[in-house]
Length: 256
Length: 256
Image 1 (cartoon, each protein chain N blue to C red):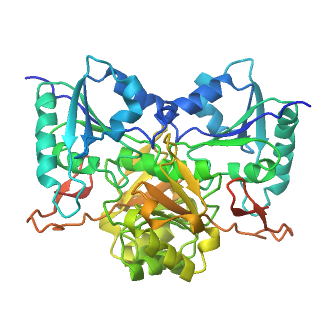
Image 2 (image 1 turned 180 degrees about the vertical axis):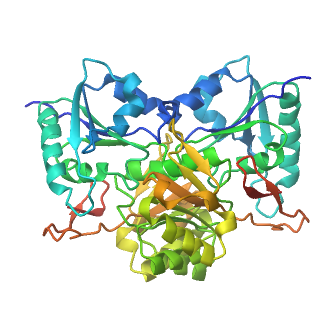
């Protein structure tokens, strides 16, 4: 009986190829088959991130996925899973390239659900764009007892507002056409002065703009708003006080 | 005038040395000075993670930090910042090793606040133990429109309950002596059957146990509970239904 191939869900990080882990790099450069999503207009961002590491003798599977949310992606994932399974069945390992972190809002999960029961499966965690954004903005997200919520901008206005009202720090992801709605909610909750905007963190076309200057028409899906924690002050009653300063990013930030 | 040295907040991931990024590895192996926390009993986990990469000619700064939460860490960070600044002032780069991700509940932030105004500072994001835990447990955290909350177990019981009541997925961190309280809250909210427990994800002494078998006395600070999303079903009315199965980790998981 042939041994089955191993399926890797390979987190490749947010865009900078140097943010691959040593493990992801090792697997990527030694696995015989790689698979990645390709959009209807032929773009393959995950492949582009790691293109310098791919060898000509590696087999590539491009998975067509619809970006139109009104269409079910399930038939597309069925096709992709079948293609991948053909290699796994004959003992060939396959690495699926996943932007950011595979287990966090990742499309890999649809393949995981289809394949991980039949084939040995290993997830290699990657740097999430959420974490990378904080590094690029140069601002700590959370301290000590803070609650952090990661909130998709796709939620309706009331739910967004309810969720944002109770958090110490938040990251609002998948902005795109929802930007104006999100900014309205943030403004109403008195959070606008804390909100930081970033697009395509660590990619070559990364953009950081003051949130008050962002125009809805320019906002891509791969953008987010970070509302960092307001530092917990005076915990030990040692008289240290927070104060505001102009940060390097043109924003005021609370620091010691 | 001497050029100033650069301060790196170097995310080194949750424990597996192979989960360093290529960038963190490059900086770690070329920087002249590294700094890391050391506990009162002489343990230096961050250094241990990367010990195979450290060269004998690198200068090491070990930063003593109190683990007793009743004592202010500020004097200790003042001392550490002064030591680090001595190198930066004369143009020598310094990398501070940060377990996991520097900007997420990281002690690096206290150094960032003390040094980033005077010295050029760069944050290198790392794999958070939160993300690594999902990979090790083999379970997706969030899908599509899910809200994910990261909640410290140190919160009081009422606040914990309020926060957990409204999330689609949650990670409860810093369990330690708060485990029994957290399990009580989870049980009361009817979430116990979804809760997964893991200690020291990706470290050599990683431990995954069914949450109903965990004893308070055994729970370290570096443990967490993951409550993964219940998959959003029937979005396209295509008749696919979730069902439960026994997962590889001895837990039931919801899958297609």
